[in-house]
Length: 511
Image (cartoon, rainbow, N blue to C red):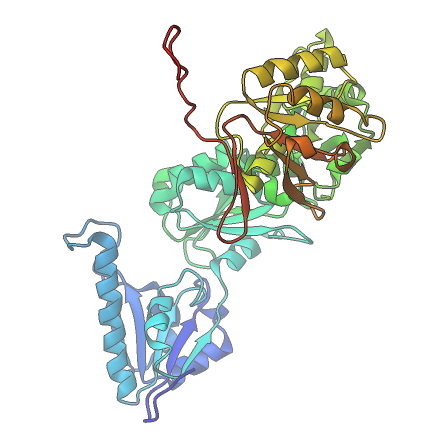
């Protein structure tokens, strides 16, 4: 830290803990006792929670600096609005403290909770810490206090704890609550109605708790669903505690469901928040073993892996679990509705015995979209998606569809191009497409996109080698308009223009 040569005072950011004065640290008490100046923030009514926590440690000879916010929730006539008014306030407050520091006085800025955790002190720190000797005294946060008052673990093992400000947009809150294991939402008050809706929409409301003024007078602990929005102060938090060992709600046979979820082409980076939430909340996870390995292991959750060629049996197994009241997630690679498990589950669910079971399909990033993004934008115009697997349909049908799509000049996304037992389809498809496409047509080979063995490269259609294609590869075959270029940085990109050339009207002279 750069500090000027002349003698200056020392700046302290003093964490006071969540409200109970007995939860102040010994170091916090020592610093306040040694300080010449004690500063604290307050609203215009002049009452400071920080000062009230530290009151018994203040001396008559302390110089007190009340840093009074010009605006809290009301409107302002500042030309730059609320943000401008607050920026001016922080600059003026820092200047006031700098006067004391330049005079050699020690300044202790009091902060509820921890000074660098959503605290007002950090605005002084950013403006002064590079100019004066500074020490930050950590404090017990409201998050820790709330967990202590609930008497339940906040996060355990490999669970992820997410801290969220209630001021986030409602949709953002919903997505993050759905995706995480445990969470605390701060800054309630006027945000509470939107926060509650976010918990409800994300399906987490039954698990959520409410803690108001933890460790302070007027403390309240309740279920979040039971709280009246009109009674919620700013100093309240909503808590989703650890799911490990948490009692699961008792459910009857009519409460089961099946959710078919897409895990994307590879690992966790490709999961949507909605899918993360469904996987975390499931009692049972069912799927092809390779795809199950992408799903984190959670205590109390039962995993059912199987071979890749038993889709119908897997679907009926999942539906039977749901009939017993279980929440079942059926995992599928990519998007479950694209040559994957959604159809198998819905086919099975059409049987009479499953007619009343709820079945949901959650989208995922497709292999075609993933490979296209890596290559550039080859799917930028109309395209067709075709599976080259003849396990469930005759090759004659595949060939007819390839010809139709090729003659329509569509970009093609070719799934399931080859495997150990299917080695000839790629060559047949290439030869058929060459009847309609230039030999120079770009073909993107995307293999294991997003995975450790990712390979994305582009070749001419005439040079497409079946030996270089396996079941983990997807092929994107360009149209007559698809471009393939090398950029100045050496990157090869493929894209299909958004505009297609107009065809001349019938009878228009050519040439």
